[in-house]
Length: 194
Image 1 (cartoon, rainbow, N blue to C red):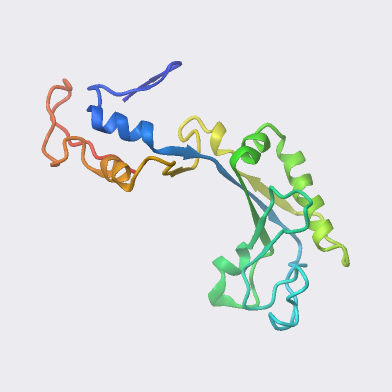
Image 2: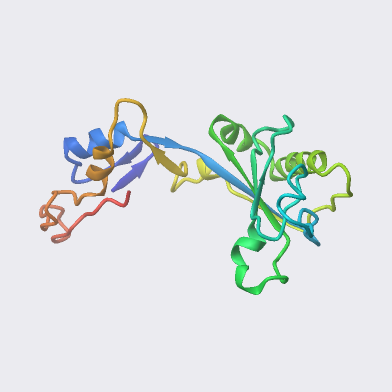
């Protein structure tokens, strides 16, 4: 594989079926903002039923949505601490993660990390307006579209394509896994990670 200012080029060239599959499959952007707090203000004692008309999470819940109309790009929040520390209940880190997808993810990549975290904080303060939301202790923002190695974060099948395009991407370059010669660097097998 060779990369230059005009994009990625494969040497030896890819077969037409592989090139077609690459063109057919859509490529999108899904970024995440992780925000850690001194305590988990979004967790509250009570049953799911008792907390159903609030943004607070009962002990058995791991996520809450944002249907407030404020910053709809932050449509879902996940309690990462509970998700990664389920076996040690009561000792979960206070970390929330929100997703930003599609055109909003593209716009978010143009923002500074501080501005993006402030955007998340505005949303959380609106959702939890009955309590004092603490300032985060740290944060991490992904910007997969700006990453020179990935240039995005997920694939999808647009209308007119089929799962056969995924199968072609996943298959070995010569469809049988046999060795390919002629690269000048010995024989090789090339499998597509997709």
